[in-house]
Image (tube, rainbow, N blue to C red; front, side, top):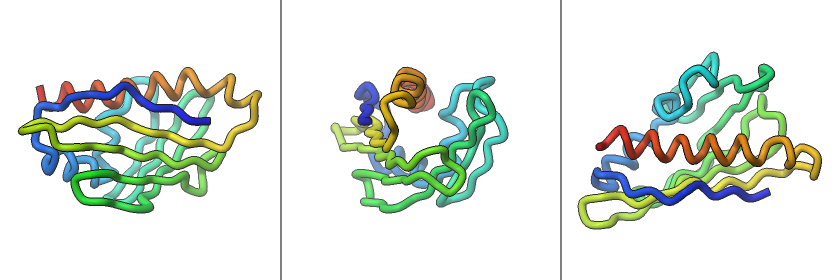
Length: 132
C-alpha cells in the first residue's frame, strides 16, 4: 500500500526544516493532539499509540542531508512499512511531502488507508503552520 501526503510549501529554508525533522523526537510536535498517546522519542527513533492502543514505532534508516529522511517500522509496529520524508529547496522555502509504503493485506488496507492518509496530511500541515 502506497500513500503520499499532500505536497506542502514551508516558509523556512530546507536546512532548517531538515534539521528539525532529522530529530525523530520532533515528530511528536506534528502529530494530532488528542488522537495520539504516550509519545516517546529521541534523535533516531520514536513511538506512540494510536486508536485502539496500537503502537507505531519509527526508526531512522537513512538520511540524505536536506533531501530526505527514511524511517522504517520498529519492533512494536503492527506491520512492516517505510516512511520517507522528501524535501527540496524552493528559494528560501522548502517543498515537501511524506511517501509511505506499507506491507498490509487487503482487509487491513481498507481499515488503515484513510486514517494514515489523514495523519500524513495533518503532519505536513502542522509543519507548514510551525513556520508560518
